[in-house]
Amino acid sequence: MTDIQNGSRLSLVWTNAVLPVLGGVVAIGLWWLLTIALHIDPFYVPSPPDVVESFLRTPTYLLSETWITLQRVLIGFGIAAVCGLLIAVVLAASRTVERMAMPLLAAVNAVPKVALAPLLLVWMGFGNSPKIVMVVLVSFFPIVVSTMAGLTSTPADLRELARSLSASWWQTFVKVRLSWALPQVFVGLKVATPLAIIGAVIGEVVNPDHGLGSVIVGSGASSDTPLAFAALVLLAVTGVVLFYFVAVIERVLVPWARAIAS
Image (cartoon, rainbow, N blue to C red):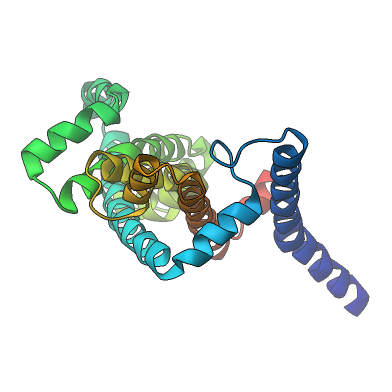
């Protein structure tokens, strides 16, 4: 039994830790190899050592800008998650409301968010507010769609079981429909995580005051491509960390989802 447990733990470590790190190492190695083999000028595509050197020149500055972007992402993502879940619950509770509201939501989602960024500056001024709103606009729609898909896909036999036990509407919703929908909810949250970062960067590029988006704009103006790549790498790392943070929460709250899927 001990050998089986040890083997299972080693398999989990290999799958969840070693393989992702190995994939990142392979990607960086291919990037480095291509810059050497194709003799690419660092002005266009810097090599990994150039990016590391650029980061080490101003680590405090880049990390402080990363923290500013991360704050905007977390605030906007939290608002999008709460609003998206509430909207999805309302739409799933009434077919009439769903038929009325879904075309409007789809139309809002179809509007290019880059085109809205200058208007947000006019309406809300400079500062954090338009950037946080941009994060909300970009990331809330996948949460709504995934949550609705989960809430409307509850098996009929589970509903009949709740009805046979004389469960109230609220008890059926919380203990049956919402519990069944949780895997789909986390799918939407994981899809929305990188979108939230994209929304923050859009706002920072349009109004480059602080954040990694402003670093990219400034590095472009000064032709400092390695600095721009350093900011892009930090954005990528931030996205990976947030994605796996949501995945860990899913493992804790919905441990049975993987067993059902398998």
